[in-house]
Amino acid sequence: MWLIIVDASGSTRRHGALSKAKGLLGEVFEQARRQRVRLALLQANGKHADWVLPGHKVTAAQQQWLTDLGAGGGTPLMDALQQAAAWQLRRQRLKPAEQHRLLVLTDGRLRESTALEPSLCPVVLVDIESAPIRLGRARKLAEELGAEYQHIDTLATLNNPV
Image 1 (tube, rainbow, N blue to C red):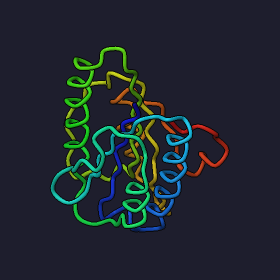
Image 2: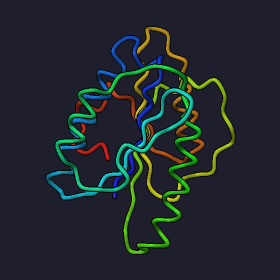
Image 3: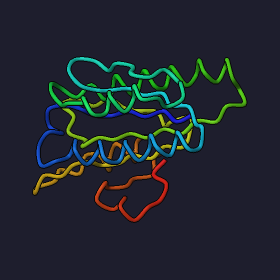
């Protein structure tokens, strides 16, 4: 099971950050389809995070969602991370043998941050910040989550981001 959190806040519209993230997500969806992996997908924008996909195989609906994905509003990434942690705990109780991986795509431009517990599963945080002056907040977030940090510009050489 791959759990994906996508930061689609207003700041990701700048400098092509969301476009790059959409390209990466297209590749991840294709990998999941080929490997017959289930996906759970949370979109973080506006005031809260919303579940797009609660843990199903990839279908044409996810491709359409990806095509339609736009950015705007705030960055409820903390809400998304909390929802994801609660979802993982429930899922572990229901399916203890199921293995999870978490992929977080964010520019790290959060207005507020709370202390985070390290994730219960392996995490890759992909920093999509593309502004000429980078704040580097996603790297700090990755450290708090105990995540492997990657910048999206370096992923062109990797075969398996998840």
